[in-house]
Image (tube, rainbow, N blue to C red; front, side, top):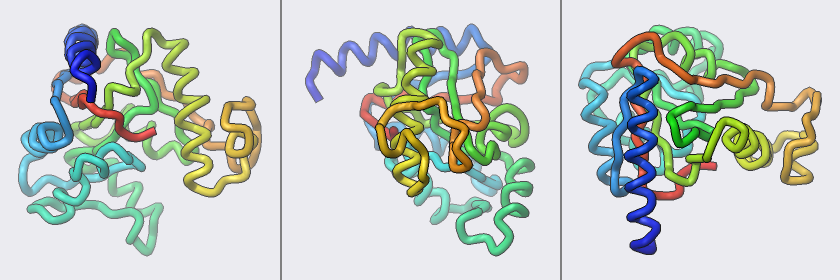
Length: 209
């Protein structure tokens, strides 16, 4: 990565972290995937029950594999015979792994969901939420973050899941009411009432969608 981009990202991350702190959330900056993985594992005590949504960023830094191979109780809904039961079990997990569709420079997180298990668990459920966020997802304000979530993240995810939504064909949000829509619930996390619950690891890399 260009060293000017690295310098800019580091300065921007400091601003984002201050914004998170003002919202009763905790932020960290990692120079790369390896450092992000190390920090994430520091936040997850051994023996913890761990759940997750579809966080590609957590996969990309090796966190999901590390949890599966480590001394943790990983609730794997993809392998569960009863997926709904696994989702319901996840609400009582010690730690929830997530990414975000977009976030603002002053620490607001924007997430869009289809089944809504992910956004509901971010809002309330597991005792700790650990976000892995590439600096590519940081936007100037809520409007820009919402546009990113709906016009970048949503179409790519719709294509990834093979859904028949207008955005999967056009590449941008059509504000659809398709049966396949993944824009069913939109969560704006602007403050955490519970100190120590939400942790955001900003990674100096392009991660996720």
